[in-house]
Length: 407
Image 1 (cartoon, rainbow, N blue to C red):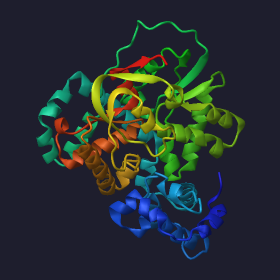
Image 2 (image 1 turned 135 degrees about the vertical axis):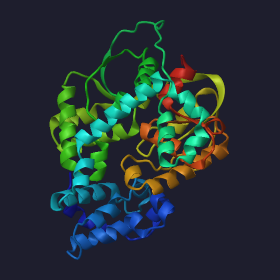
Image 3 (image 1 turned 90 degrees about the horizontal axis):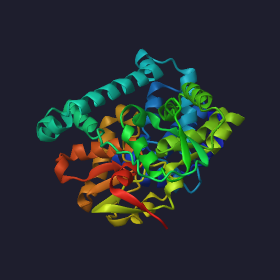
Image 4 (image 1 turned 90 degrees about the vertical axis):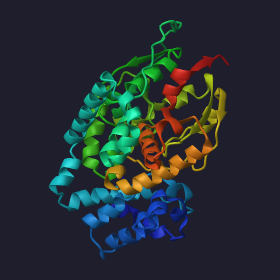
């Protein structure tokens, strides 16, 4: 991993052309020069020249970013702003004293405790069938403000159970995969991993369950590299060496696991990253047929490298709906939604309105955080659940509604 000081030439190379400003979702929502890459580069240039020093205020501006990489994709100078911001925040952590609140928010113990509590809450929620009551009292919950919206957001994560297909043919095992099921699948949404295994049942893959930690994406994005290294090393230790794939179903997890080789820079990490593949890479050539005629739209996660829209278009017996900004950031982006909730909600609402206008029945995506972002946007519109599109994980949709066709 390059040091912040080693990015001096990249920061100097920025011509302040403003193309990043034209595509930045945070700038669109705030119209703040500090939200866009060229504005942050002005401040970081001041740090490199000794005119400014790292401070909580500067860190706050650096955090005003969803990490969508739109600025990198449109930059004529090919500057990777995201990596520069991470390196800069890493220097902040090394030079600035953290407050008690910062220490708590950066504690992995605190993070896991929240996930465990969420998992218990969701399990009780399902057991007592609270979801049926939420649907009835949706309007009342919206009047309660933040608490009501949080309950509606949780309601969106209850999902459906995927039934196992015991009638499938037994296929000879040729590959071994360690399934990196991620935090949401592990604690809140087990139906996603059930769906993936059902879809891949005829691919000759033996799934080995390992007790992986979180991929570490929130710590990486925040520049807390030391904590990120601890998590990465734990995952490398858990994985061992006897596997053909590390299989990820989440675009953000996939992207983060690939970074292990850059941050840790050792052979084990390189082997781990090289063997990490997306579920999309394995099912991309499969042909699926929907059992229902549905209008389906797509939200492409910021870190999704596969042609998700092209894949969904090829599902038979559906009508693919083209929507504005279908590949733009959903605005959730993990801790960004906690630090800048108003901005996050504004970005999400803009996305949600596009899908409502499209007339789609379902919006499909491959990132659990994006599902939260889209649901957050729908909640902000105030439009009832029955009058807006459902948001589903693509793999859950394929397992629930589709059959595979031999090609």
